[in-house]
Amino acid sequence: MSAPKRQKLDEEERNTSLPSLRKTGWTEVEGRDAIYKEYLFKDFNQAFGFMARVALKAEKMDHHPEWFNVYNKVQITLSTHDCSGLSENDVKLATFIEAAANSITKCDE
Image (cartoon, rainbow, N blue to C red; front, side, top):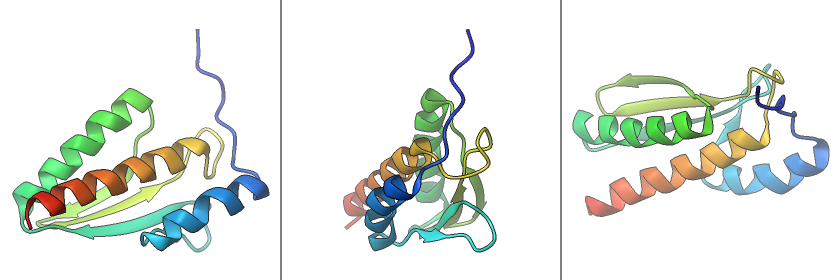
């Protein structure tokens, strides 16, 4: 049985979901229905640990980020290919990503 097609966020859902993500540094990608954020960590090990946590969650959600990593920097773009835009899964994964990053950097303080 295949999963139901994911739906693009409507205007009301965007107005409810996106402001809280913007407050944490997520930005909307110009020319594309996607959100983006860059994270900086202490070193590569911390960045890779963060990516591993996100990868496990993304796999459980069957929703995978576009990301790029160099040393301590991780750049993440979220969009749902099934609906060619932002969906509830992007919001859920961005919220998880934010919590994961905060827990990793707080442990280091």
